[in-house]
Image 1 (cartoon, rainbow, N blue to C red):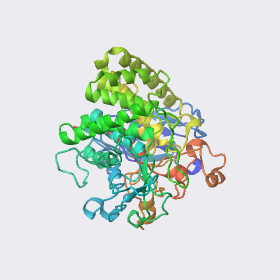
Image 2 (cartoon, protein in one colour; image 1 turned 90 degrees about the vertical axis):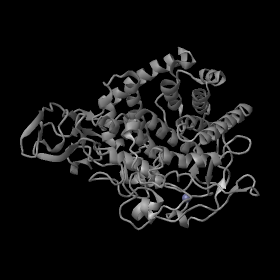
Image 3 (cartoon, rainbow, N blue to C red; image 1 turned 60 degrees about the vertical axis):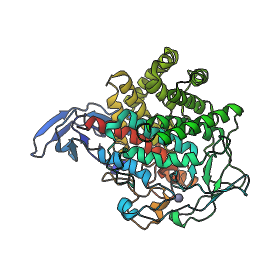
Image 4 (cartoon, rainbow, N blue to C red; image 1 turned 60 degrees about the horizontal axis):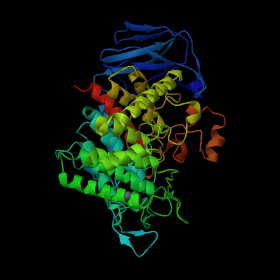
Length: 537
Ligand SMILES: [Zn+2]
């Protein structure tokens, strides 16, 4: 399969003059770089090409160092590829990834001014019924469609918002305020404007007793139709511990972030978070969420709520300073937690981020130092995985699962936070390789972000993109990428023994490899915001 692909793999969206230019080559020839006048400006010898297990390729990452802004040709033997180096090459991609969430907005019209050719009328505005008691009817409008489907799920939404809020807190300079969304120009940074669209919806998903409905979906996935044509009844599905704890954490975090913009909003979020926490205290026996009989939308089940409770305790302590929350965080933390886990199932990493950057030594130095040491050790291991990979990808060959882009971007987040925490820039090249992976430096020679790159994903599993009659998919959405676990039989039949990093079909039905999701966009937003912040003036 890769035989017909170029021997030089690049970030198709270009490189930054402030950062080293990384490419991967599949030919053991010297790599030369020539400028527009044909002068050779760089030569790097490639002595050997190690075998890369994940891709099955013999391939090596080559660091071409920093290059001044301009257009270049990279040569490997007789083959060549053009690259551009710019001052701030990725701001528009970072913006597009945030705007990608605007395109997921539910319950409002996406008008031409903001959505262009992807405009559509308001969807999912009818009242929803409570699944367990269909006499209860509520109008809950808003939130983002979760992924390729039109469901809205509290836990995944909370995690997505958290990635965005931490991107704002830690890499704010890389978040531009020119997204052209309805709130643009209101004095609030656009990344916070967009995140608030989901926060307002999450608040509406809380019940009187403090718990949160797990999700608001129909009982089945819609066919490939536009959202405004999806008119079957939606249901508030039963409450869950994980949704309640994740919402609690996210709202507590948001209650700090929006303080300088809207105090009343922050108070309502903090009150909701405390109410959720008290419901969790009063209901200590964890019950995993399982789809009720007859419901076939995303389950987002979880084996444990300890990580969500840990994250919630950290955020509540950071927001209130109340000792009870810190004591709870200390009690819940254990050294075997995955401090780099930022996905919807395991949110331990978000508790760690809160401890490392927001709480720090405020609760006494015990927990902070423990987490700091473990986090540093973990990040060094992540960098080693990247170093061992032929494409520099921080994902072992056996870990390409549904949405492999999440651990890859999540590992980049961890490497970036290592730098922000320690000031040590030595792991930055490994973080940068993950960003380059998303934009084309990979075994498939494909850019996973819609609308960016010459060879980019075109047929994402995304209902609006698949039913709007427009050739190009909705821009700014990131594909889940290669997946060799949990694959559909039809994918297995097509791909057989294909190596993990190439187990991918850019085809609309291939939800197992080419779906999009809000919580895959958001870690990429964090990574893009960091690298854009390094390039900002
Ligand atoms: Zn909708």
